[in-house]
Length: 291
Image (cartoon, rainbow, N blue to C red; front, side, top):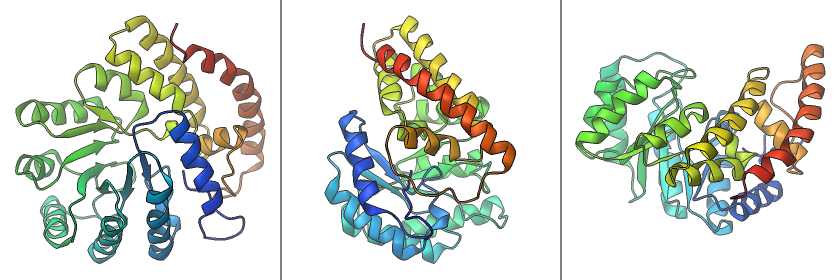
């Protein structure tokens, strides 16, 4: 998430440092800033650069930065700044809003890779519900020749992930599950990791789920994955990433205003969610502790 100063299009850095400390305390392996859950498109390039330059210094775990932009020049500017700041890696979507053909998307990624100054690894960022997406044949070309270090698949489509998994089995790369609903299944079938939006508010749940997948504890995996799905069912009532931010607020994390105000019907649903979450969280926190 990206905490925002009330009434402004500026990042609340103090709240962001508290968020970093919260996530590190729950033993995440790394933190991604300015992704979809981070609402990157609401902030200027200058604000995005300011965040990464300071977050890297604050965090005790590696920081990865989504440098996606609607233009190639914008993505390159963000990437160069992130590399200079010491980010561990980058994520890059295809250019968004306008529609582009597969050959144009391929050209965009190749030009980016040839132009960025820095050694940070870059992940393709596949989230077709919000932009053009990355066709499998385009991903194959960019991953097999080593142009990109891997891919975050946030499609939520198992067939899409399975296609990437077949490529991974032939030539390994960083194949990361980006959809929380597929996280446990993807990890169990060999995906080397994941990037979770829900973990912004519930890091202990995703950390525990991952730990039990690695330990092949199927009973605990089923329990924790079920809890994750209970939470995700509530997210469907709100725009992305409102539900995650509401959960974080209830945990004492200052997030600022939502990008769009609630309708009267949503205000009612938010109160229902808050009551449910307050009762649900303590139970889940106990279940996340190894038995």
